[in-house]
Picture (cartoon, rainbow, N blue to C red):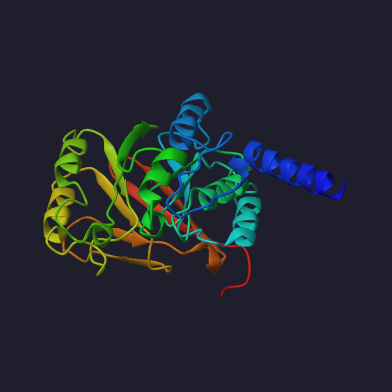
Length: 275
């Protein structure tokens, strides 16, 4: 009788594990995209196209923040703050959504960001590519490089994590970037994770990347994250302004507005104690 009871218990536990395997992540090489947390970029772009414009005139206004990695409480606080803002079209997360490139981490962040009143979009960060992270990011979010148009503005989202592929001259994809920027009639914003003047950017592509951007007459601003702090300047001595933003741990984010031919403004929102 004792043997039967134990055997029955083991069988029940085994059945439970089999039927609940989507709740577990057994290996950093596993790609998990369960429930609604799959192809989120396409879902949020569809939502963005359907919603009425939040900002007036030809202005597009969005929140820019970087590096949510493991800052789950801070992410919830960030969402509460952003939801109090008015006239925001969408939120842009500048990469390092995860810390270890796990699909489960990306879904944990999504569980908090999905409470935003507006859509959110992402670029891939270097931490998002740890282990099998590239595949996990593609499953949960979507393409590593993509672009979209909204409010008369073209947004070009670029994978610039060159060190994660051994700085082998393939990331960022300058051919793709050049093609995306070929239309010079659109006001344009370029966003990525690793800024081109950072040591984690492929050094053999740095000047070529900057040259492609400098040739665009309506490029309003280049946005990046990665270094967890705000910087602004013209590191390549051209007309392109390069901005980096805070990590979520700093309890600050930027509201970016673009309008006109290539005008932009930056507002800093401080919603808690600085770290």
